[in-house]
Picture 1 (spheres, rainbow, N blue to C red):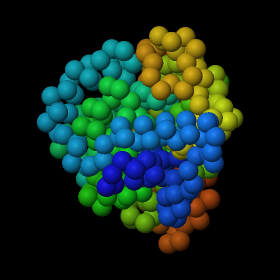
Picture 2: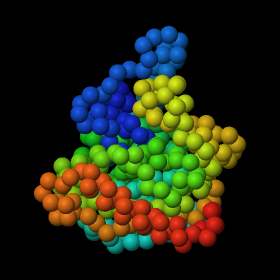
Picture 3: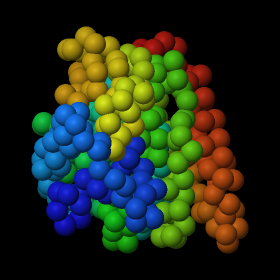
Length: 317
């Protein structure tokens, strides 16, 4: 991306890593509202947020910074979340790979942090590894350090650039639809029918490794995605936010939007990497996207059900 406006226009519509269909087609959509005070306020908010977002640059990832901070952060994750990551050997040892995960925990997604630390410890900080995130996450106060760990704004350009550079790339197709799902759906993989990740893997000719995690949705009490509220406030047009979640979280009590983040409860987080999938080898030279989607999600759901069966109590694990 060349400037903050482009960054905002190409941002993921779902918040945490899926590629917006209109960005792939070249149709960036229309601006929020047509007039009046509400429309002007929303446009002002969109402009304010976008000016806070620095241009995405893969060179922002800093192996030395990761090396220096990895031991302390992994210790913190181990103590607070009792983090456990399984199956890292299923990820190819080198070369580009698309890591496709389910997503939990609100804007401060602890499952992403746990997996990023584990990946860096297992493969070494020199192996290029990037994670797609919504521009709003990167613009939140105190989270600029994420860019040093390889977090970049979700856009087709950044995704393709990362894979073409030979990097491992982590995406969350469910985005904010999944990450803010109600607590009673915490054991459900919900990509909301989004298939951009399949097209990306086929275009780039890279394998997919499904990543399944559990526990993140227990770090706060998520009550509602707030789909209708986001639409009412025109956030879908202004900021590409389809939800305005409502939760009970520390230290706010009632937490609407989760824009300022929250203190996550110390739920046990377990992440499991499944076997890699070569789409054309398994589904033929011209894979049917619906078939691939159904099969991959089914495998991930089965793995998540397995992790859930091991869990004795929420939070406790």
